[in-house]
Amino acid sequence: MAEVIRMPKMSDTMEEGVIAEWHKKVGDKIKSGEIIAEVETDKATMDLESYYDGTLLYIGVNKGDAVPIDGIMAVVGAEGEDYKSLLEGGSTNGAANAESSAEPAKEEAKPASAPAVETVTPEPAKKPAAAAPAEKINAVVVRMPKMSDTMEEGTLVGWQKKVGDKVKSGDILAEVETDKATMELEAYEDGTLLYIGIKDGESVPVDGIIAVIGEEGANVEALLARENGEGGAGVENIDATDEGKAAPAAESGSNGADKTVSVADSGDRIKASPLAKRLADEKGIDLSQVGGSGDNGRIVKRDVDEFKPAAAAAAAKTEAPAQAAQAPAKTEQQPAAAPATGAPASGDFTDTPISQMRKTIARRLSDSLFTAPHFYVTMEINMDKAMALRPQLNEVSPAKISFNDMVIKACAVALKQHPAVNSAWLGDKIRRYNYVNIGVAVAVDEGLLVPVIRDADKKTLSTISGEVKDLAGKAKDKKLQPKDWEGNTFSISNLGMFGVDEFTAIINPPDSCILAIGAIKKVAAFKEDGTVYPQNIMKVTLSADHRVVDGALGAQFLLTVKKLLEEPMSMLV
Image 1: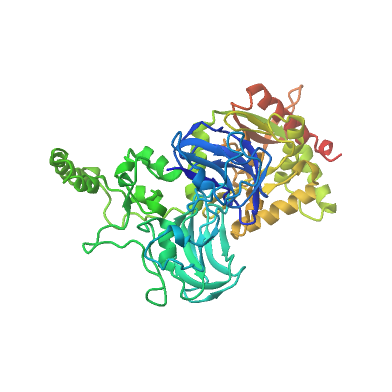
Image 2: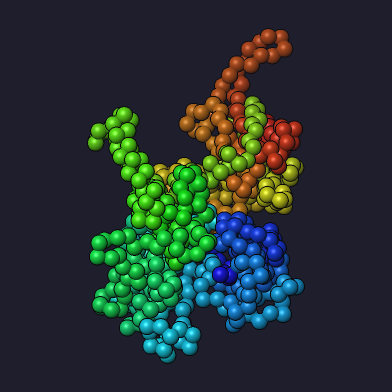
């Protein structure tokens, strides 16, 4: 079945996106998780993934065209499939592809990447279902928005409203923990909170339904059934004040069976999130055996985490007696092997749930280290003149300037002289940035955040110092917004304050380089006549992506940084 790809809401302030580049063309085969286009939002240029496998049948907007949130961008389906009915009533908001521009637009009922809040008004003429034929459901679903470019799911920290409360557009519904910070979720509609779909502490994938707002008495059950398909798979934890206002669209049977829907019965295409596919591949799990608890039975991360192969084998017993005979033997051997592992007794360890931030750090840095071929260049920098200049600068500066601020400025100036280092690897091309945005790693309790100093080459040391302090404070208080951490072109990580002499850092995607800064140490130096004198040395190590930056280029860039810091007045004039 063909699926419509719509413009997703990629930041909390995004209203439309501009197609920066198409990576696929009509007729190309694509898989779920593949990058099909680049979209420029109000915060950054971001990759748009496909959530479906199939053939790209239709492209509705050209490169450079703007598309509003939820606007139709493309259609994916089986080769030769008639998709025209999906476009009726929809708007592509741009020049259509040459093969498809004359085709009537039809709106699809189930978007591939829905907006954070979607108004739903079913077409009674086409649905002779349980609801009254002419009934209009005056309610909207609230979905988990994509609050950062790397966010895949959000955790509900706490609800600020409860079922039955009156809600106005702009009211804070809940606090959501993303991989970057804890952020507020606003309502976009006026009405009554009719339904809450998740409890405090639960995680929801991006685009998952979390609430319903509308008129009192609206048929929430019919709305959720429509949003989640015929059986309403994935609708759980309904919390309503009046019985019948909201009810689970899918209930477990009398034997307490799982509420999940097996994707093996939903057709030959397995619906799963990219993260779930990656985890399944790492664990060697066959997704066709996993039940999906997401929208329309889509497999999400928690389904893979909770999957038990033994249970799957038992479920298949009635269909494959020969295989079932072997399944008990395997499940019986597993408990016998457990004592040999020497597992610690209860109380010898503490399990701490992984935060969204830590999950993203683990995923992104693993992808970076094992995908980008790193090489490292280390250099010693004489900081004597920088140490002599710093007190003079602080006498006139409105903000206290640190050595880290001086390194940021030196790197920004050096990047303008070596623009090839200020680049990113995008798979089929290298993007060279005409601006310099320096990401500065900040340690927080739950991990690491990288707020961005924009146009650092154009700013004074005192301005850089003030911005670094302000962003570091926001990071530690979990008050950073997407605009604060998006758009970096180069990164810096400083462990010198901890007494670390030197270290290597992992590149922060999408950058091609990161500079690791060690402590300034006094060492013995020798003049030509053999006289010993003290010298303040700082070691820095450049980690570079060899696909973008060659060794000689990395060394030349680092040599420029060295010269600027050893003659700091040169970067102030």
